[in-house]
Image 1 (cartoon, rainbow, N blue to C red):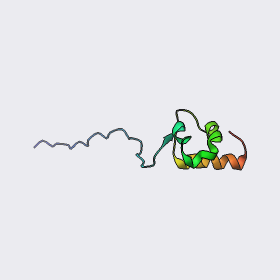
Image 2 (cartoon, helix red, strand yellow):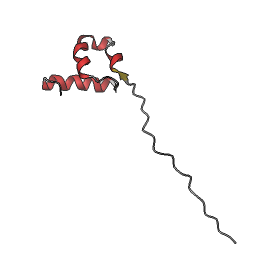
Image 3 (cartoon, helix red, strand yellow):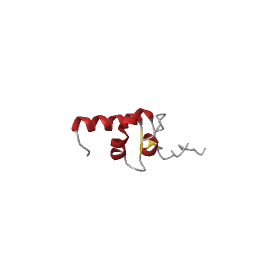
Image 4 (cartoon, rainbow, N blue to C red):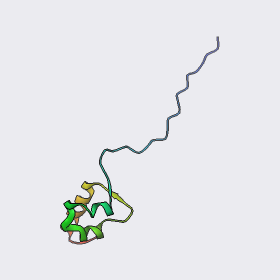
Length: 71
């Protein structure tokens, strides 16, 4: 009797983890009422073309005020 081997299906390349946390562009963030008093600072701290979560933006602001300078 011939033996048959069961083959494991090829696994797809690992996709980056999908997150339900919304991300925003610099342009979007600068329109938020939440950051109305910090728009000038955020326009310097945030990079064009990069996306940020609200947590990341808050962290950038906190780090700036702790250090008092832009990296």
